[in-house]
Length: 258
Image 1: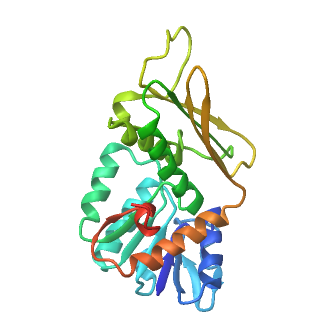
Image 2: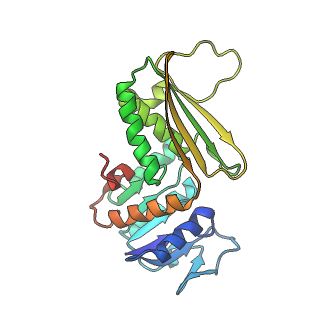
Image 3: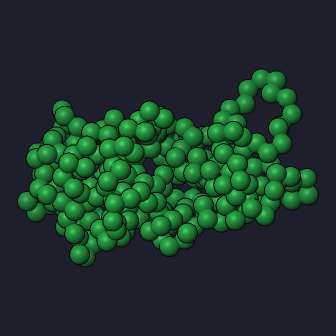
């Protein structure tokens, strides 16, 4: 299976390149970075140097993208034109960008996930199950912490946790989410799902879903200590995706948790 990595010089890009070059049955055939990057021209594997134009890469089966929304949209257009598949770990899309991405990739095999950790996706499954049992009498709170360079908040994984709670309760997250609290907020509204965010240092990713009642508190936690766990999950998703027809999938599909 032939893979292209975008954002090749970033932290995730480097992890993905390492994972692909060490995995059996896969081959890195392309790597890209934004125009003007000092990484352009760097050799990252046998016969593969980083370029600033995706169309310069050899034909591939799958492209893995952990970049930024605008860049991801540009890459998606090339993927669709070249009949590749796409694994997307990019987060932070606004509603308009998400609609555009869905339209571009409507005929493309695609895996989209906020987090490619096997552990996180198992936690999402458990969170939805818990929400089905622990009704709105239990206050739901999502906490997340990341490194100081992360630009979007709440994290995609935190939002996925919130959506898992909402799905378990049969409601839409947008209707019940509380993303910030400041000043005289009044009492908590029953059934709401609250979020809190921390940023600092080099935290890879901490996530916690809490179900809080007067008599007890249930917590489902996940702590990532190495970004390699995300890269391994993304490559696993790419290998699974090559066997699928056109459609949009997530890591719950990849892991058979649905």
